[in-house]
Structures are given as structure tokens and as C-alpha cells.
Image (tube, rainbow, N blue to C red; front, side, top):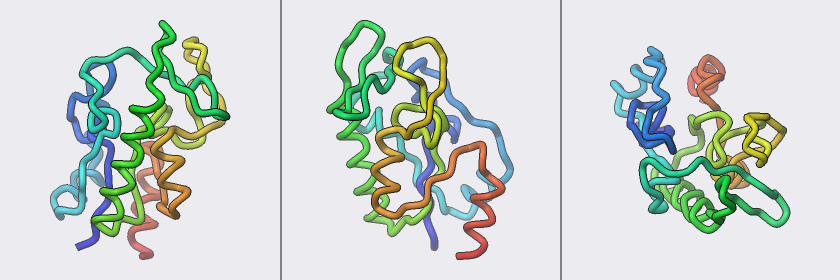
Length: 154
């Protein structure tokens, strides 16, 4: 059975930084769940961060630095969570993941700018970037039809 890694918050788990979830109730996600395809994962919680927790943004890509608005450093926790996601994906032979858009962990293509002003910039979250570096296809919840098509073609 093919498995896909899915951000836990997209499945209704209250693991977001604000203690909420991001589930949309989308039928595709429900179908994949009913088929036993989904491996839920939250890199931030897996790395030991609490729920709720301060909002964190990527302050710098080179060198990588993540902080909350009080300048508390979270870089190592985000790296740890990304490595745990990669290990889980490799253990289950996962080649495709569904991650939460805009997240400093899971965002792909667009993330917050590191100034805590709700402004988006080009970039990838720590987990998304690591998975892509290992040839794992990353989709966000904004691309469910594209992900479904990818899964049909494989």
C-alpha cells in the first residue's frame, strides 16, 4: 500500500502553533485516509515543541535561523523535526507529501518574511526543503487536485 506523509494539522489534529488545526474536510484527504494511505506527522511537535507555542518565522536562510517575535532561537528544533520527517518518509518509502502552506516547517514556495508582519516571500520551510532535497515531491493543501493526479500517474 502506497503511503503519503501529511501534515497533522491538515488532518484536524490541533498541533498548530496557536493550538488550532487547518483541516479543510477535503474529500481527497478523506479518501486517502479511508484507504490507509496517510502517515500523519507534525515536525514541530515531533521535535518537542509545545502546543500552543509562539509563532516562529525564518529570519535567515543563510545561515538558517528561526526565531519567534521575542528573538528566541528555534533553529535546532526545526532542523530536528525536518530530519525526523525525512526518516519517517524513508522508512515508509514515501515519495510524495502533503504539507501546510506558508509554515516555517512545511511551507513550499511561499513563507512569511521573518518580520512578523504577515508578509509572504519566496522560500521553503525547513522540512519541505529537506524533503525536496531528497527527491520527495512536496504538495500543499492548495494543490490537492495536482497531488491526486500525481498519485494516479505513479
